[in-house]
Length: 359
View 1 (cartoon, rainbow, N blue to C red):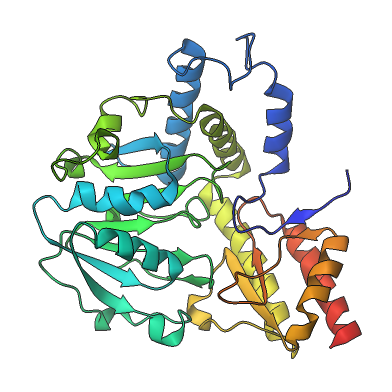
View 2 (view 1 turned 90 degrees about the horizontal axis):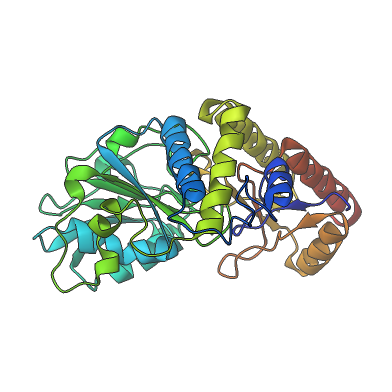
């Protein structure tokens, strides 16, 4: 197979070593005589896998003992509902940071359950900058504060953690496991798997234990964190294959040296690509330098009429899924954990050649 590099924003590429391991194990997992997709989630083989994957994730993130780790379904979008259902806890307000399209979606869903106050709003600058935290307007009566550390569509990423007295909730779908974080600063962290964790179909929730067990009355049982917390995430049949694959990714990260190691790799990749953009008169990135994303790098060509040609030529060169989101245009390179430095270097070389030929 010809070497290609997949810059998709999600589902994203998986580490090649993990894919090869999955390939080897696909027909039979361990000594189970069946594929991991076929064995019971309540059987000894899968339970051992599930428990190990949780231990590995706890090790990687240094998750404190007073936090539960849940392996759910429904994506981050389901959490847009589950967060207010579980965290309002008798209050009528929640505070949200509006810094991009995923924040917009989370806010719209939260309004179904409570009054939403915007503590900061980046819509006026087209989500290219973030207001200084000292200037935020946080409602002290809010049950929690929700923010999206990285907005994948515009490539806007926080370089700080909001310091608040109330529970802090973060949609880390596109940043989890990309660097070291202090889990203890959060009440809830949630993340869809399809960027840095594994295949789509799995959502990981890290929730402080004191925030479990007091939901809005009349809500579905499957939207109550305690339903899963009390049943090891197996109240119903979980997404067994994505859970298994995520476990293999956790092992890969630990073998790599953990989050301190992948953090250095990711920082270098991002620097490489942004330097290529900034040193060019042909490419540009509209995001405030301070808040540029490590994971998602949008860039515009000086001449929009060349966009289709850029995509055609880049695909021929083995550089896939570089088309920008329709709301932003241009290009977007998503360089999650599985993207090697060689892939970024290949993209930068292609960009140089394309600028030379058409710039």
